[in-house]
Image 1 (cartoon, one colour):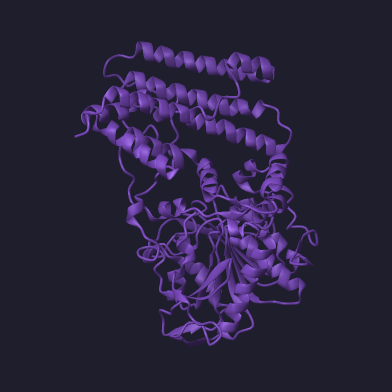
Image 2: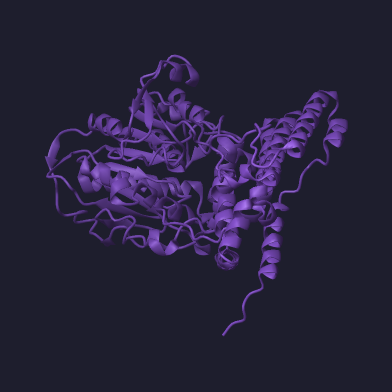
Length: 566
């Protein structure tokens, strides 16, 4: 029988662990007076304001009477869930911790505007690091300054502390913070379950053809090119929130690329490989299986960048394989490329090119950490609090299971992508980039395009996605969905949630478009389906057999590649 754990020892371990996490982001500045001296007079007024607010808060704390709830000196934002527990305002001490932190956080963000930087990219990186520090030092992240931790520990007789330690040890073995109940999901069992078969595969991807769910289908098939940075089943989670299943139920013959989760033996793969052996090969196979010259195609996130590149290569070769193009939260012009730009600069990229630019892989866990850091409170610290301080186990959530199912990428592919897209923004310039042996020009892509952006997207800012309209020469339909990069895309029609904007003035910039656009309640999915059917050609009887004589089914969907772990 194991010995009873010492609650004090456990608490000390927990405090040390959370404090160590916070110290990964050391402050760049010391005290407000030091900051004012370093940055000059423009911050003197800001320092005085900070001093006055802290003095007012301290006076309020000293004069507060029992059972009194004075008006707050500063309040948390409506969307800030860290301090939603009533214990934060009921206790004078914890109320002081909370408000003092919010005053300090506001001060640091505002003073960051005055800190000099080499250029706009460096400025954004600086602001990002300040925000990381602000998020990390929140009193909610530490056992001694979180009233919910203390109350839960007392009410449970220390059991919550024991559970929190066990959760932390388990996550240390995984090498990541648990966001969901991993045991609740299995790919191919209750995720990625739309029926179909793999009808082609090479070293880079498997091509899935989905079984028809209607008696008739539109003749022109749809190829989906998902991002290779994550696994495809974000578009095929469960039947009720699967865009793939929705498209099949709408009468489309759907094909989808399942990218390989590469290991070291494929560390040589380049951007050209993903274009030539990936998207272009998939377009060829779909065309041959369905015996049709042009297909419709959809690209999501970096899948849209790969697809756009592939179509530009095809056009330079005198080929025109796509009738209508759909881009979901994708960038072709990287002028406004979001917070990921904070991680790309000449010096660090040059080092990466020297290390892995000619071969090697970037582990998927590194990507997961980067994307989580973009929304640290939502994707890091809330789980530190719930899992380790409160001692609860995360609930089952399909989207967060997918988020933790990371993928590796080949070094040559990634470094080329970061340099030519994020750092130098070469794709938007006609003839500047050579891919697969030809100079590419996105302006030659004249097919109709449906471009979806999402209003709160921090990975693909919607203003950046809107710029695709100026690059492509065909008629474009722009739709702006509510929410963010994932939730705005995975917005099932039957749920009737959120909203989207359409039909804005196309003659101006993105803001002018939005000012004149019409908001509609619900999902954008039916709007897209209606648009795509306009390019589907006639209806034909659905075929029960998948593939053809040259491309026989290899294995049932979702295939082997998507099940490979990083």
